[in-house]
Image (cartoon, rainbow, N blue to C red; front, side, top):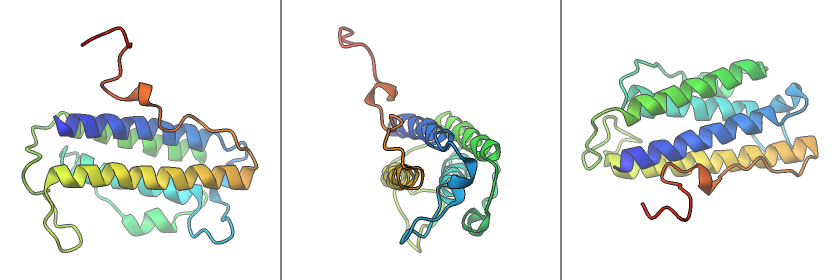
Length: 169
């Protein structure tokens, strides 16, 4: 059950990531560095998509994706359309993981930072990691574009269990 909820949150947040990337009026601003900030929005988008494709898609969903983490931080000038395509591929990875028969009370199928971690714990970590970087990207966009408008990044109405208030379940 936890896997389904984590997948729903990550899918929601990947859709928010797409909205953030699309909200940059000038595509070049995706790659601008703000003073004191080590990563551009493009870099964060590549990192988030790669992270989800690896940990959910490859490790839980068996997609076969092979991650190149250093490239996520080294690539520059990736066109917006390609960033959006990679985000959509991450959404497919989330669906693959959500459809897998995973016991979240067992260890995650990869050693993380030389540690064994229970899958449920790591799923919660992946959600908070994503939200952390999504917030960084949102502030980057506002700073480099001067546009203070939000994109509705973490809408509770988009959660997997959201339903009209009159629906008791």
